[in-house]
Image (tube, rainbow over all chains, first blue to last red; front, side, top):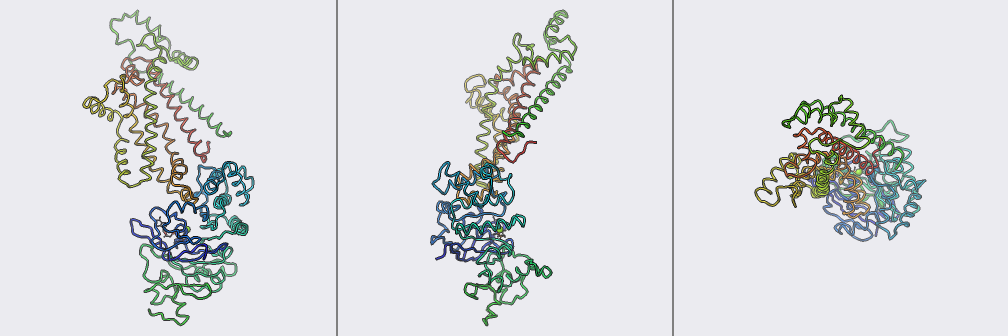
Amino acid sequence: MSLLEVRDLHTSFFTDAGEVMAVNGVSFDLDRGQTLGIVGESGSGKSVTAYSIMGILAANGKVVSGSVKFDGKELIGCGEAAMRKLRGNRISIIFQEAMTSLNPTMTVGAQIMESIGLHTDATGDDIRKRALELLGQVRINEAEKRLKQYPHELSGGMRQRIMIAMALASDPDILIADEPTTALDVTIQAQILELMKTLQKELGMAIIMITHDLGVIAEMCDEVMVMYAGSVCEKGSLRDIFKRPAHEYTKGLLNSMPSLEKVTSLKPIRGTVPDLLALPKGCAFAERCDETMKICLRKKCPLIQLGDDHFSACWLNVKDRGGEVNG
Amino acid sequence: MDHKTLTYIIRRIILAIVTVWVVITVTFFVMHAVPGGPFLGEKAISPAAMKALEAKYGLDKPLLQQYFTYLTDIVTKFDFGPSLKQRGRSVVEIVFDGMKTSAYIGIIAALIALVSGIFLGTLAALWRNSFWDRLVMVITTAFVSMPSFIIGSIFLIVFVIKLKMFPANGASEGGLILPIITLSLSPMSYITRLMRSSMLDVMGQDFIRTAKAKGVPRLRIIFVHGIKNALLPVITYFGPMLAYIVTGSLVIEQVFAVPGIGRSFITSITGRDYPMIMGTTIILAVLIVIMNLVSDILYKVVDPRITLE
Ligand SMILES: Nc1ncnc2c1ncn2[C@@H]1O[C@H](COP(=O)(O)OP(=O)(O)O)[C@@H](O)[C@H]1O
Ligand SMILES: [Mg+2]
């Protein structure tokens, strides 16, 4: 049994314009201490997947079907009180914009201590001691002084460290990082990723690293899941995805990724993401794909096992393996 | 309190003093430019007696000299001179006497407006688009733009004259209830709407999602993370609200026969009681300046992002 088992998750937002189908059948496993990367263009449903797991969707959002099992326990429909005990305690999340994600009128100390107070028995001075310890863990110096500062008085990198400290308040089993470095400078970005790796070694938590940046994935992850329009295109080990990409979308992402060797041949994927209010019947990527076949437009390809834990949802893979693609 | 805050407060106080001085000066000269004198209405007054009266009150001196005497008396003795009509009583005495009642209804009206405005606005935001929200919005839209004397007159007709639920005289028991409610309705409506939109904005912010992701219980999210941030725009309304209540009560006290500053002010205008008119104007202006100062400083205390420059 994995620490986290997500099965066929469907999440929609109900808006005046209709049902926005943001997540359409996502499944994955996460083991203790593992790092899973979720990658995809903006709008592919990465954040919504994470929020669905945590139960922090916007008021108009709802998990329509599927299952999320944490430590063997079903989370979907388990109730607000039970979820509250898990959130920030056993599953924590940090966000892209640390500035807006911190309360502007509360000192960072108060915000970290609030987390500690919620999930531990500690009181008074012990909470304070723990907060100082957490700041040490995320390598913030002058901790005493920092506790009394407000978010706007800190640098971007420092704010993200504060977010991490807050997330680690009660040694979570899973840390979800939703584009934690997207808003930061390259050097600060590297520092934060380094810090997360170190913390993972020290604390042994599993990490779900959400990003649109394959560079971050390459740096951090063991396993990778590629998402497009709310569905999983491909998942596998870091090696599978980078050395043996099977889905045309994954190949497109890799081609559009800048690297030292091939700056010149950089090739963005043409077209734009489909409208989630009216998803096509077939493969959501078909209209942007160079290899589209008839079946791609008619029917969505299920995930097909290509290797040990390498899966891809592309009819070309079926064809390559001599399968029937006229369905 | 840090150095910057202190400098800011001192600067604001100096600015407030200058404002008050301008008010005194303008009031004084405008008052003296108006034709007609205080004793014109009194019949059978001989020229000699008139001279004596004017000399007694210093009205025969050059205007500039009168002005400096007036200013010095205010600054050194907080003395606004004697009333011309209520012989033997000083302006300060009369104003503070009326202030007892006026301040009482003003403060209660402000408190009612604040507490119920914040409460109603928060509920409307949390239950956005519900029947409750729509009801609150309709009612507050009506009251926010209605002048207080119209609200007061309607109340007077309905509750005092027709239903006889309240006495017509503000000085009798229970007579202050209607003026207080009348004065509080418009600011309460304004605060409700301000609080509603502010709360809606705050509850949609990223840090509320963070609080939820931390496992903070909903009520604590609403109070500690929501309301505290949503209050910021309401605080900036403190000053204007007091100005509204002060000016509103000038008229409302007339409507409900409340023995406050408002009434003595109107009486002094019709009686051309110069020192009274000037004194009341200046004291009310000082009050408003102080309230604006307080609400600015309060804003800084609640919002750490504001740097006082
Ligand atoms: N509250 C909401 N109401 C309507 N649509 C939403 C809401 N939140 C997210 N969505 C939509 O869900 C889709 C997936 O969003 P998201 O998971 O944030 O993408 P990303 O992969 O960039 O994190 C987007 O098309 C977005 O517009
Ligand atoms: Mg996102």
